[in-house]
Image 1 (cartoon, rainbow, N blue to C red):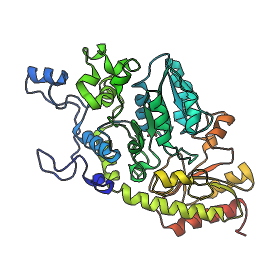
Image 2: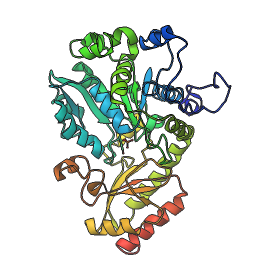
Image 3: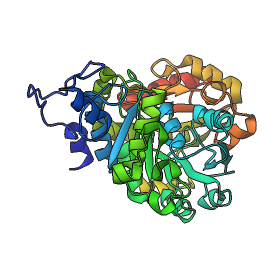
Image 4: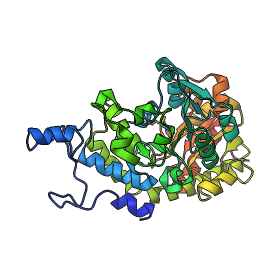
Length: 428
Ligand SMILES: Cc1ncc(COP(=O)(O)O)c(C=O)c1O
């Protein structure tokens, strides 16, 4: 099935007990056992079934199957936020004394996790100076356990050459983990280009309505853990925390996701509520349609800003003179995401006047809502970064980020025009 169809039908036909056609919300914590023997068999992973919603839930399972199908993976695990997803995705393959290698263009809190929190667990993050695959390759050593990037960086809008990055990672015998939040699987499926694990904040375009936090880890099922067994003993040798289970033996191609569920979700407890899973499923039904409109509107906004003398610069990968333009054609079907940054003449002060004058665009820190949103990254989402780290992440003190929504384009442009007039003066 194509993505548009999977978004509506993936993982669910009708409820097996009631024949309900809408996915039911299984708002339950636990599930009854037929007998002591049945309970033990469930805990021994000998039979399929649900035990406790911290480990699995039927509503959430539909979302997991749908996301795995949308990304072309073999399995998925939903958690309570995008941040939890990428945190678990990395913990699953690293240990104290190991490192990961990352691009510098990251969502601010991801950068904080990598630069400040993982080191407290003895895991180093090596940030490349830029997103060139060769820059990542230069930082890999025998203790590296993963290469990490955002398919399209938030807010830089850079597009990663993931095919080349996957080659770099695989030559070193480690997986490539890709955050695909900004483009969504509607624009690109990183697994097709060699990514081993895909993570998402479902909170953004997939949920699409700014109502619900959620995250997902998708396992491609392709990384040969067994071939690199010495590097990944947590997947290939008995796990004392789960009565000696060997994940690669028990789960086969789904070993990585199996461990994320059995170890991280079960013991650390980041759980998506069934109601949230249902709300996210509702959003996903229309993601393909919304993305089309987001992409079209963002192009019109980028062109409007580029042609306006009150605007100093626009960063938009869809312009032919952008260094990322060829990668938009290669990976994103020529469709540029609806996240873009720009700066207006008059620097930080004029930017603040513009921001305060917006009427339709919401002033907040989120992206991917159906509504148009505006954010000032340096003072909010990326505040914990040093000025140099911000510069490498594609942010200056004057940078404004727009997540262009699906309203009528005339209303979007009218709001930008009146805010520019308030900040700088009428259009020349
Ligand atoms: C690219 C990206 N990844 C991950 C996250 C974290 O997602 P959540 O807010 O669902 O934890 C965000 C949040 O803005 C993001 O933009």
